[in-house]
Amino acid sequence: MYLFSSWNCLKCLIILNFTIPYLRRWLSASVLLLLTQIAVAQTEPTTPSLVEASAVPDSVTINNIFLVGNEKTRKRIILREMDLTVGSTYGWERFIELLSADQKKVYNLQLFNTVELTPLFITENQVELVLTVKERWYILPSLIFNLADRNFSEWWINQNRDFSRVNYGIKLDHNNVGGRNEKFRVIGQMGFTQALDLQYSKPYIDRKQRHGLGMRFTYFTNKTIAVRSAENKQVFYTNEQEDVLRRSISSILTYTYRGSYYNFHHVTAGYQQNNIHEDVLLQNPFYFPDLKTKIRYFLISYSYRHDKRDNVAYATEGQLLNVGVAQYGLFGKDDVRQTEFSLLANKYTRLGRKFHAVSGISASSFLSRRQPYTMVRGIGYRPDFIRGYEINVIEGQQLIVHKNSLRYELLNLSFDISAYMPIEEFAVFPFKAYLSANFDHGYVNDKNRIPENLRLTNTYLYGYGAGLDIVTLYDLVFRFEYSINNQGIGNFFINVRSPL
Image (cartoon, rainbow, N blue to C red; front, side, top):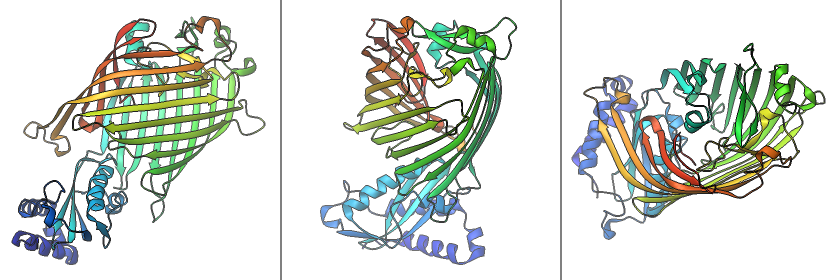
């Protein structure tokens, strides 16, 4: 029998806390957490590696699940992520597997700095779960100061570190509106790109928490734009009067369906309008079809997403699959008629306690021969790139990229800075560092065979090198890499976000 006096005290307090309203207010989360830690310290370990073989039960029944630390986040939002349910019975190995998986799924909500799921046995095969979370700071006002270019290396090498190519402004994020995991963002931006961006998403609009909605409105203008590519690099243009060369407005509505924990369906419908200055057509007559200076069209797209990564910001095990189709131009008066298919498939494999391997394929294809330049795809545009070619764009109608990394966990630290940081949500500073060996390869098919870009289009490309990845507070990722491509050109690159 796994029965201890401290657990009896904890159980009585929990029961009173949930049955007597005025005691609920009196019993604070901090007291409950302290008692939980005492009970855990006295309870025998329940992980398979620490439990004696004779003590492992054949099955486990969950009597209750208690949440600690979710001051803002609704209980139903958290429990939606868990396979483990009250009243259910599981085989021992399945129970241990779900404990680990559910803890990762709750963390992947990206609402909490830490998540701990602790089983407390009250009999040999009956358990009560305590899920302890530490919430993040959800309202994040911030100043915008970032580069307008595709990546740091593009700005540093191709654009000669030109500070006029910087965006600045104000951004406000609310990542947990009403404690329901709703996202709201507003951006007011000046500089290289003048923009207004409004976004809102509600993951669940029904009681069963399967259906969700999102919407976005974007408006932006540019006085300098990429009008074409030459020698596999973007060519930018600004006219002498410094007129606005491009003006864009778009609005979209997205419906999501989540039938199971790892599978998502997205249907997006929207409207897009782009205006350009007539001088742009002098630089590239094919920028818009039929020498137009304005194109308008409706669009609709569908995508299926299977996401079973242990960490959505920087995964070390699991898999990700995203398959999509988009139709640009739905009605007779639309100025565009394009169909696009896309694929993203990543696999993350643990090779031991410190090593893991990552392999991912991304591909896309347009059916038509030529697209408006605002819709051009290729290697160099997110998420399709090859290490060693960060300063290049290899444009075409079909592409495939295969990225690979072998990573070694160099550091995994966590610093308590509460003595210097009065805000609890920032009191713990995590720091992880990974060494990586990388090899990427791919191919772009350009049906138009533009002469000035033939060096890299319609040919096999690859790049390899080594890097250092840093993962820190609020899942921020920084990558420092040196890569060499099959042209024999090597460069040092700085990137933000995980490569796959």
